[in-house]
Image (cartoon, rainbow, N blue to C red; front, side, top):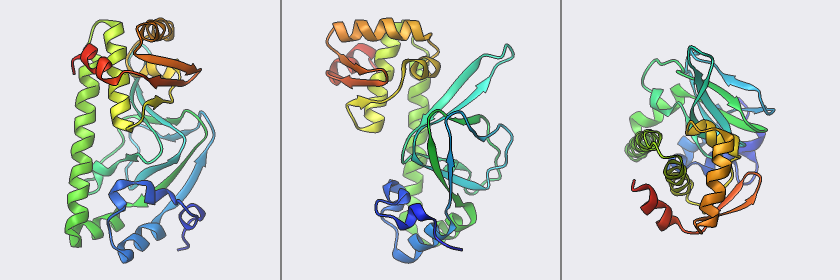
Amino acid sequence: MEMCKACKADGRCLSKVNLFKEIGVDESKSIYLSANQKDYEKGASIFFIGDFIDKIIIVRYGKIKTSIYDEDGRENIRKIYVEGDIIGEDSIFLDKYFESNAVAIEKTGICQIDKATLRSILVKDHNFSLNMIKALSKKVYETEKLLEILSIRDAYTRLAAFLAYRARIIKDDTINLNQETIGQTINMSRETVSRKLAQLEEDGYIENQAYKKIKIKNLPGLINLSIF
């Protein structure tokens, strides 16, 4: 099996994932050889509810939205994945099926890693196994925090909590998400997001730099606002 072009290039996608940075050369080579590169246009489906998870997905670039639909056809977004994020790592030792649909919300590239390859590395590499446990623990933590945010009734506070959460997760003071995506993620209309962003900017917490670029100016203040 030939290594994909993205993995051959400098700054290869898998080297951006913390989980794969500390493993040995032989194991790293096995992962790169098992990688299958795919690219999607905006709006393209990546997987559907009920699809069997036989590979781990790593986002090379772009953004992926996972969501489900309720009985009335309304979309509920589960999560937005960005460059370096992993999808399906909690299924490595389990036979699982996707519980949501995934769509590229902009031009996106992924690498798919064979689960059998990861399983063999986990069995023989103690440090890699610990890193995997840490990654899964982080994912559980992020899910719990997002559920806490969704439980906040006040729109201003909920948006402040989400922006603080997002900034800490991506470890950056610039959030590159448009108002529609933010609204879908925290169950808020785009119009309400727009109004509350303007209010947060007026209050000195953020700066709306562009259509989908929000700079956090006062992260401690946002955290205190949201109390989470």
